Amino acid sequence: MGASLALLGFLAGVATIEFQARKSPPAGPHSTSAERGPAERSRNEPGEDSARPICQNFYKTVCQKRGITRDPTGSVKPDVSGEILALRAYEEIIRKHPEWSSDQVDEELVRTIYTPKVRARIQSSFQWVQNRVIRLIESQPEGVFTKKQKNLLKKQILSTQLDLPRPGALYADEPDLLTKNDVFYERSPEGKIRLRVGGAYLLSARSWFNIVFTLAHEIAHAIDPCELRALNVNIAAYDRLSACFLENQLVATKRSGTECTENDQLSESFSDWLAVSVVGDALATFESEFKGPQLVNAAVNSVRDLCEQDDGFRENDTEFHPPAEVRIERIFGRNPRIRSIFGCEPLPAGVRYCSFNPSLPETPTRLEIGR
Amino acid sequence: MNRLPLPTLLITAALLLVSGCAHQKSTPVKDSSPGAEIPSSVDISYFLGHTRRITLDSKDGQVVGRNFMDRQVLKETRVDQGRFLAFYRKAGEFMQRMNRTPAGDIPGCRTPFEITIKSDRETRTYKGCRSSDERGLSRLVKDGEFLLYSGK
Image 1 (cartoon, one colour):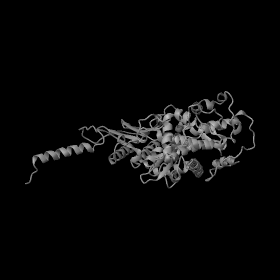
Image 2 (spheres, rainbow over the protein chains, first blue to last red):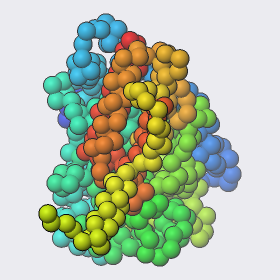
Image 3 (cartoon, rainbow over the protein chains, first blue to last red):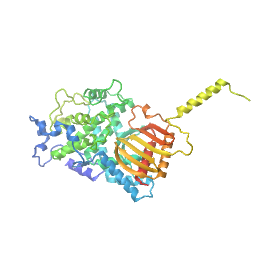
Image 4 (cartoon, rainbow over the protein chains, first blue to last red):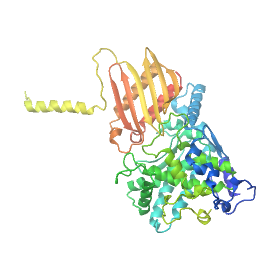
């Protein structure tokens, strides 16, 4: 029931929706092999992975999809499609109002793209993600984060503001963002932390799961290792996590002491890692509501835009971001919770998924998955 | 009449020469041809999630503008010559205002940009970092988009 309300709330663009963790599977048909409940899913049968393509190769499952991909909450289009749509809207406004100035056209473009419904959807998703990240921080034991460290991290997250334009209050200092697909985190020279959302992104990504991953990735930058370093904050758990990233080749090998300098991938890998954890929560919220292929599409949509784009023109940014295959296969596909949701076999011996708390078992039990 | 001693004159001349060179952010190729400068192109390349580019090229009195995303042409159109000239001046003024350290000297710049304007007399290039240029580039790009999509 909680997930249904959440889905309806999201689709209706209600400003504040609290997604309730499911305590028990709802009544309803669960007759196909793809719809096993959590209890059944924890029993792995021989050759189980071969029955689930996503378990065999997350990267291929996500990135082999072409064109638009749909899940019950919405679709994800290639980045270029969103930008073409935004520019078409822009051009149409100019055509209808040839006497308008550039600022007047921008104001109308904001009204067209950043509608109250769209703004409410993004704002509610932002709050949901913030809450999930706060919960992740709070759930860490004292040996991982002290109370003081938790308060600092939570403060960073809660200080991050979502900066969405409204008519009359455009991105006046960054007007070209209205037609761009970019979503980014930034800390101003005055110390203000904010997220900004390009207009084209709102036209290409309608899936809640993609919005969750994208916002979670950007919010995570408020507490990424490099951001904390810039704030002169040193937390041992972060050092362990960074070492784990390096050990598992989630970041390109760097000379010691060069983290967070030019060409470093540490902050981006951290943000992916944290966002994947939040997406795990999102998928778990709906795993009893969605049929198997729907859940797979939701997972695909959450990280769809990390793939090399369909058109072949994309010059992937591998300077600061790891390659798409690393991001999807190793950071997303190896997350124990994601694997558990899809009934994948546990990670092979010797492969460890990075965590703030290294004492956690490789594969979470049902209690740890805990809703 | 007081005169400066020769060594002082030489030092002063040398200082003037050096300061003139240091002020240059680009490497113009001067031409001694008489008459007004004839602008020929504006090229703005920048990274914002994707590689992006706006180009305006004037040849034989006709101006063609293009908008790229990751080397894919999103828009190609004719542009009014007068408006191109105004945009060329705007780009030149932007470059003159920018006296910050070039992107190559800003460690970890994730949003670099490069602007090149050409005329019959010179080519000027400026490299910067979007996050540290007080959003001037964003306004310039927006003006470029308006120029291309207003179809005049």
